[in-house]
Length: 425
Image 1 (cartoon, rainbow, N blue to C red):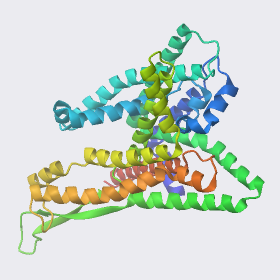
Image 2 (image 1 turned 90 degrees about the vertical axis):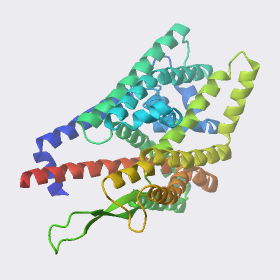
Image 3 (image 1 turned 135 degrees about the vertical axis):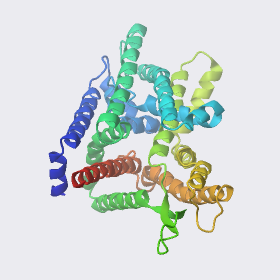
Image 4 (image 1 turned 180 degrees about the vertical axis):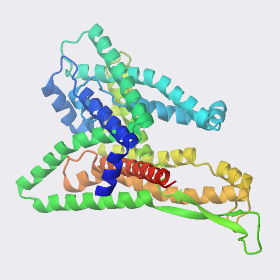
């Protein structure tokens, strides 16, 4: 460990990347604590503390306290995540966008640009809905329509700015910038949750606190195992025989991960649940009686713990399959293997290989989807069995933080390995 740290410090390029990432992440945390004016803190704490506002309590922790502070970074990277969901859905619906996605790096960059454009209206919709909701709950006091529009412009500009910082970290720093911002926001909210949970010891129920600690350690261990779990599909590449003793083939493996989608399905599901809830709260004050009934129905649905948990479970399960088949396309992989002369032993190239890969990744993804969905609703299970409400997104937060740490450490290890190779050569 000490040797790796010395190598990092000696490498000027790598040291610069790490310092850039840390500086930008620290700047994001500063932004998250700049509050908007005219806030009634008592009303805010009461609103977020109500059991029927579970979605908003989750969103507050997920944004690293930006919502709880009513900061200028009110939405965090939420609009960008929502825009990403829409763009990826459209790539499956619109043939033209699907063709763009198949163009490789240039196509992905074009879709990323579409995501950036779509982030702007998403930030307007989510920001305006949240501000109107907070005003209706008397959290924003003595705020006129003009001041709301001014706040909205600040919120949208900050959301776009934070999105740009995330992309800047990915480009010039170390790790995935958006994931790091989300993980840092979660880490910022964890100390308060731990302090709230530690109050269990004051009631004399120390055994329950020990059970929660052991469960947290077990959850981390399972997450690490599932992140590394994969099936290695053997691939054979025939090569030209240059001597009688030469091998007739070169074998390698195609790694199929159990959790190919990573933490993306949980982020997608959380955004999918939060967005309609914000809109429903906004429409609850609409003049149309029909819209009020729809808004009341949506609010009542998301306020029910059982319905919320079931919806969260199903959404995470579905998004896991969706995202896996977005990033892993058996037909294209089969075609690439066939062009390179590679094949899976015992499986014919072409259609049969694509079918085999689709069947295999489907079974693996089923296990990964169940795992992610159970992790997502772990707090709901704990709350219903123990009655403890302090760990709002315990399973989700642990999964995101651990996954981001593993991903970043792998990138760091890869950078170190590349520099060792360059030094040797």
